Each structure stands twice: as C-alpha cells, then as structure tokens.
Amino acid sequence: MPHESPAQRALAASTAALVVATAALALFLPPFFERWLDAPVAIVANALVLATALLLHWVFLAIAARRLRRSVAGWLALAVVLFPIGGAAALILLGWFSGESNGSGAAAPSAG
Image (cartoon, rainbow, N blue to C red; front, side, top):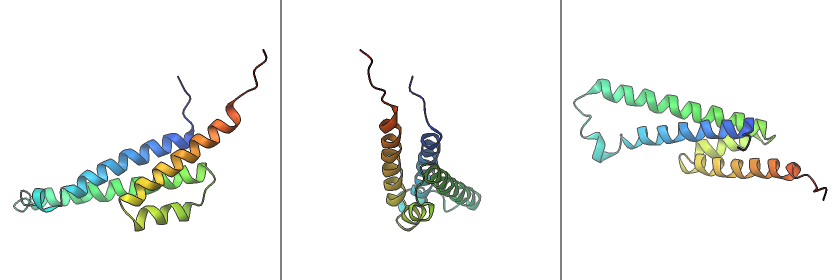
C-alpha cells in the first residue's frame, strides 16, 4: 500500500470540499432552484454548506501548496478567481507536482 504524503492528504480533502461546493452551487441553478423557492430555510442551509465547503477547499488548497513549498497566494488566486475550474486546475497541477516530488527521490538504486 503506497504511503500518502501530508500534501496529498490536504489535496484529497480539498478535492472533497470542492465536490461538495460544486454540488451546493448546482442547487442554485434554475432547474433545481425552482423547487427551493418556497423553502427559505433550505436556501439558507444550502448557502451555508456552499460557503463552508468553499472555505474548506481554499484552506486545504493553501495547506497543500505550503507543504509542497509553492506560492500559497498564487494558487489561492487561481482557485478563487476562476472558481470552480481554477480550483480543479490547481488541484490537478498541485497533485502532479506532489507526485513529481515524491517520485524524484524515492527510487533507490538496485543492488543487484
């Protein structure tokens, strides 16, 4: 079983939060929102879920960038300005950099 680095755990948590935030955002789109018009409590609850998931996505993304020794401000700017595509792009690129940093020093020369 491969060992998961702290940066990869932060990226996984950020991904889960982004999925929840995107699902909550989708509930505000016209096909779904028409069902919610009569329930203001449900609208407020969905908005709170969206705000919490988005904040967690950004926090975990910043933690992953810091653990990978990347610019936290740059990666957060990408995720915030281009939400949700920028957040997904940041996750993909940081995941790629995470795999690259783990793979570069992990291979030991064979003794045989």
